[in-house]
Image 1 (cartoon, rainbow, N blue to C red):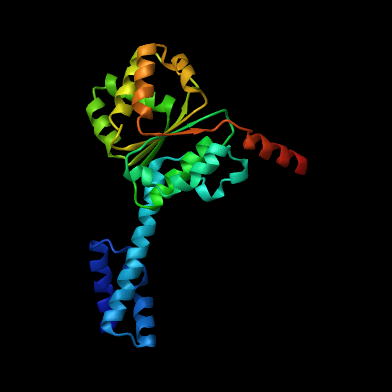
Image 2 (cartoon, rainbow, N blue to C red; image 1 turned 30 degrees about the vertical axis):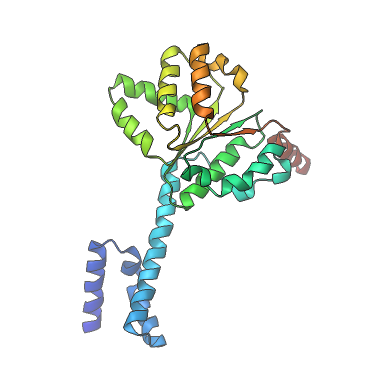
Length: 253
């Protein structure tokens, strides 16, 4: 009876301390400790290690959830032989995540279906697993959020939030063009991170065509200069492996 009361008290304290593993598993841990005749030190170590592992796993899940990836793709799932040559050469370098530590950008530029978004998401998930704070967004969505923040006079709050991410993935640059306000906002907020925090940008347009998006040649030149400084620029032009997967799927039907 006394043991039951002790267990309940342990659970109460664990709940206050937010020790999720202990709350759920204390009885089983005590039973196992008695069966194995563990010392107090070994019992405590085992309990704390399990608590730590659960908290670490939950932290990864939360970081991935808060990153807002449209779907989960892992860098290890990339079909290297189907990637453009330049990308194949860079995957191993990027997988170390050193570019995040050094605050370098990655620009994945090339035609649709060659693995740009998959590679970006894969690196983002790997970064979440390593404890980095990541955000996935599309360029059109980002521009809309910036405009809304300006109209609601919350740009400063958005700026602080934007700067906190270790890695931002900005997908789909080139699918829509921008007016002057959008171009200026995008330039300002991507510039905030330049040389300090990493950004991965995917685009279907080569640099000489970026003036089609931003319209203003001076603004275009400034954005390219700021984003490419000490950045990795990857040529993603190649055959669409998305089209290849579709053909294989159709052959099986």
